[in-house]
Length: 166
Image 1 (cartoon, one colour):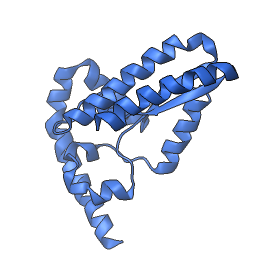
Image 2 (cartoon, helix red, strand yellow):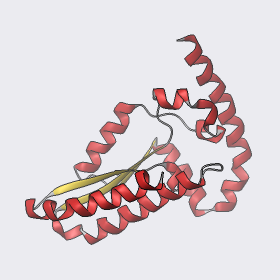
Image 3 (cartoon, helix red, strand yellow):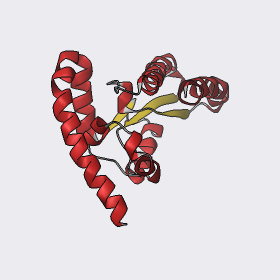
Image 4 (tube, helix red, strand yellow):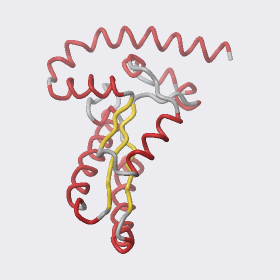
């Protein structure tokens, strides 16, 4: 997981930068996760790699600010894909406390980042705001966690039932 989520983006970005500098403009788009802002219980490695990717993105965005190369990060919460539905029992309940984005919404956010509209897009936006608050106020995260797990458990059951009826 460290190789895919962290090492590969480091190596590929560093390899691409000289070519992007020659072209006078370009973009590097990273795909993070809300778990990179608010760590998920039971997913320490995943959360750690996404947090590291987020820090790396902000650092090279600042370093390349005056080069014409835009660097940004899309940080989605859960995405409604076959993968998450196949692995639903392995995913922490709290993940489902937030609305799922669809692949089109994620693709649109990636395009917005590539155009230079932002350094980071969290999605859905409401989840990004909640995660930012929990990042800034860890005690709030601990206070809200039981309610979010309960909500997530209910939503997870709805998603599970939806997948069985299809």
